Length: 119
Image 1 (cartoon, rainbow, N blue to C red):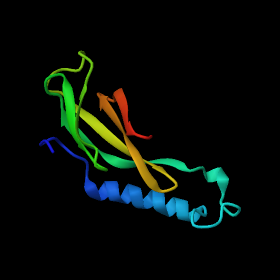
Image 2 (tube, rainbow, N blue to C red):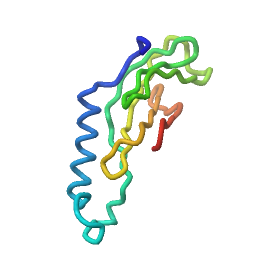
Image 3 (spheres, rainbow, N blue to C red):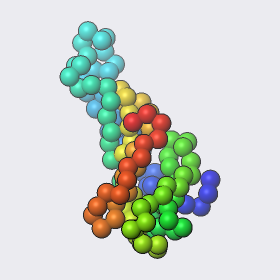
Image 4 (cartoon, rainbow, N blue to C red):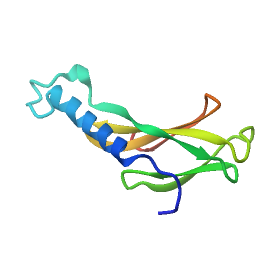
């Protein structure tokens, strides 16, 4: 894996644990006749945010869940060397991780979101 910034593993694990706890509370382990279908199966929970520096017109991150390193372009109006905020949501279906969604902001403006796997 390339030497890029990554998200706090403890926060990632806490997000996964929260999704599993939620699905247990709505009856995931019960028969489908008893399951609270209003809760739905899909959920995205925050796994935290980090600061990342724009280099060569992109931000590069190490992503969890086996996704690995990935670089994403930023708009040209975001200056080279700028600090941006990258936040991650862990996506689950019935408590099972299915992907991640990255949201990158500059000066409190979202500049892009990108999903990996199923989100």
